[in-house]
Image (cartoon, rainbow over all chains, first blue to last red; front, side, top):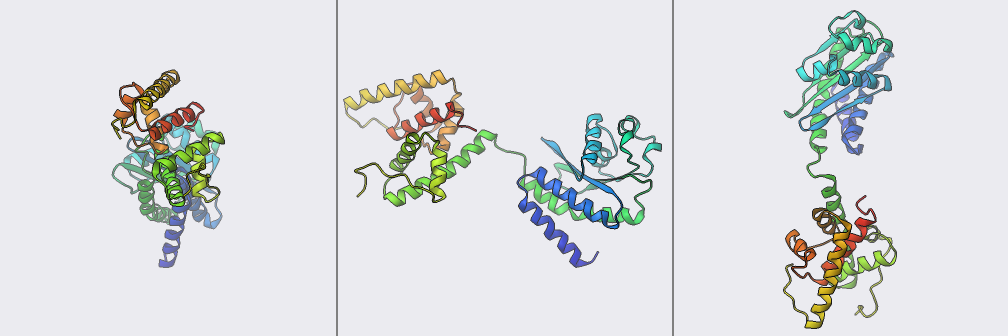
Length: 243
Length: 83
């Protein structure tokens, strides 16, 4: 791999992380990018990325609906090539799925999906989490040594960005209510500061103005605060308060 | 925020009455105390949870500005304000 190509990939991963609102969206983007890269020669191939974190639900993202079903079936059975790769952190290669006797019941359930080759490789992440890149193809022996090397390369190249994403999107430390309260408080504090500056008044008066504005227009304090912060409107102080 | 009372006797009577009203409404809403405090904090409330609890149990007075925020928090939560 040329240095430039590695740099482009790293930049693309970073943009993806910055543009993704949450971890599942990021993972989906990563799976989609990887599938389109690996499909370079035109052969149909789907990718999924599976992440398990201590104390958080697993996240699975897949470049297609079909692949999504293959992953879900493994989770339903709690067994399959990708879960083996993920939990054992080792590579699993299946060249001829219908004639591979390692996967028993899983094979029966996915028989109609026409998947013949699977390659699942671990992705190195943080100690408290495990990840794997899974590739599915319809042809037998789809993953020759050259393709396997390429997939290894992709799995290795996403290790760093995945660790960053796991850190950025750590499982919620605060329950939803507390997070909402923190956001609301930050917004109200910002609005109060602006009102104080505008009226050269105290904090209590500014809070009072916000409440009066909310009550009189039958809206929530947060909405009034948002408008003030966005510069859209400003509650008029009651008569007699102006200096 | 555990304000000592500084108003006159008339204002104290009025504040008592207001507090009784807020406490009664709080009981009627059946909101968990912690949930109401958290929401009140989000609106800019400054009283600690213990003073807040004491106020709603009519054992302590809070400054009028905080009382207004408690009333607003109850109103918004009852309207589904914690969306």
